Image (cartoon, rainbow, N blue to C red; front, top):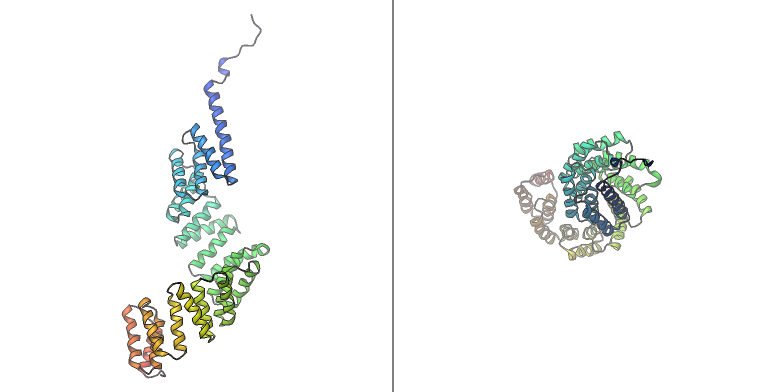
Length: 384
């Protein structure tokens, strides 16, 4: 009798089990390499790794998500959506596929679809701060104030000073013209990061003050932003507009021109600079700026500026003609009617002034300023 210990055949792994283990190990290694390559932005190499996995196992969830992530990284959202959707058809509820799919829809501004997918994700994990802030952002984009605010506040309940929620709440209130509330959240962001403040927080606070017409306070924040980046468009624009609001046109021009030195074809800024020069009485320079804007493309504000120069120079007939042409482009702008009426009054043409003012009602709009001027003319209580 042999003294060799007997080995039960059941203790030996089958050939099929060994093959499966080897296959799983190979898939695991390829998957690790693929995701590492994605982190290193070697996207095409990563796609090859994930492709090899699919050759081994059709519809492998790691490979499909990896290929979706790679396509998303290349901004090929349609292809990414196909991979994520394919993954979810075989692996329902895969969080990584849901997350990627929602991000694809968000990138394509399909916010309703993104929300639908993220809410599926939250069924499995309703404490995920990253997803909650993304959903809140999406609701903000579709202007659902209540749902957006509820989710941002839920994030703050979970993490008191979450930067994404604070910034999101700032944007949300700003978008709905609640500038004091927006200022509260952005100021809190500044207090939390005073030593390493993001320039966008400074310009956002400045913009709140600009909207609240507390221009001097706005100047402080825009100047802080310029110290960080002397060519920042939003800081330069904000400063120029604050000085305009403070009726310091000579300072305003300084910053409009700084923008134009970097972007000489900016039609909006050319017109703003023209307005500043016109308000200082420098009609010649103002006209040059307005005409530069009009050389780029028609701009109603540049054309209006030229008409107001004519009016300022006492060329009332020409000004009235120019303004009347502009009404064809913007017939609901009550200021055009008032300026034309004023020109007619200067020309002592009372009935024409009355006619142009009464014609405004045919647009279906109402204007208290027009009603008041019309009443003054009809009662002879306005000088002309």
